[in-house]
Length: 366
Ligand code: SAM
Ligand code: MD0
Ligand code: SF4
Image (cartoon, rainbow, N blue to C red; front, side, top):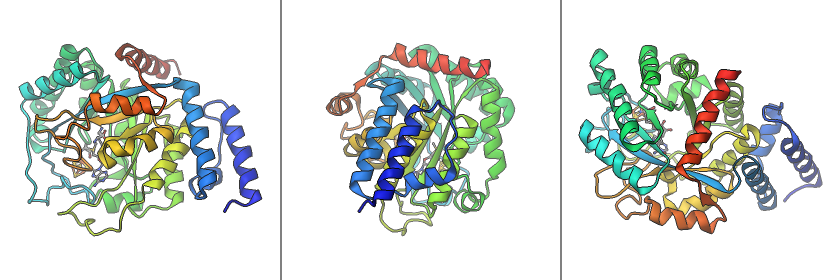
């Protein structure tokens, strides 16, 4: 039930957020108030306001990202992730540069706007000194050249010089998710990985002229205060893309037995991110709930469909390894009608490239 006081507060806060300039101060308490909304009529108002803010910056245009998980080997032991090193029961693969380029070309041909090259922290790439990372830079260059599309890399934590080398190779994006900005929770989730180093790499990528995507998880024991802290961090950094995904418990991991998922928290977080971060890109990931989960995420204010994975190439997802992939429900011909059904439409690749280039320039001009 909504009290009159809640309704009044919600109304005036949304009004302020709508009319304020990007970066206008919104307090931690206000963000927590929004994150704590539960009554259906309040959520409806929240989601509509978020969709309105999206329309203000992006009209009805949605961007589309191809996801290419090219090595599922990893030296880390994140407690939430099925690709953690200690999960020895998992079949793994490592694609060759030729296979990666071929898959990227096919994805580009299907109509995506960006290629996201993702891997576990595979020792073959990460612990092969200069040579391993030189190959990564060459791969980025080649994928960009062959597809004409911007490239995102999601390779884990890279040495600073490698970020500079990737920038010189023309990479557009570096994705490196903190999962939470509360150090104690981070240490629990990403065991053995340094909090500050992971943060520092994002600043270094920004300084090298690369767009930065940040991401958090819900359902991993976080409080609303933790999520509010993450949103404030993202605002203060000025991230270019902000992601939230619901944790999906995975067999073979220490968090396999965690209670069932509450996807509402992800949706509310998407909406609050949209209202606070405004002109930032916000993904609706197919990785959590597949195609069935897309309309709700778009209705909450997301403007990028991510984790588009073609079938028949032996490619995997992260949060869910196989959900909807071989059924072709993560391919554009099945996704586009769903986008349309939400009253939205796919942008053109040129529009996406123009957005990304404008965004990169805006950081240099600051
Ligand atoms: N290995 C690189 C790294 O960790 O930065 C790149 C992979 S990263 C893009 C994989 C992301 O998927 C994680 O950062 C996390 O946000 C998400 N993820 C992994 N396991 C998940 C799970 N079980 N449920 C939901 N999201 C998960
Ligand atoms: C996705 N499974 O887009 C991918 C992944 C990595 N940059 C993204 C989490 O949902
Ligand atoms: Fe490895 Fe990334 Fe999974 Fe962590 S989230 S175990 S770094 S693949």
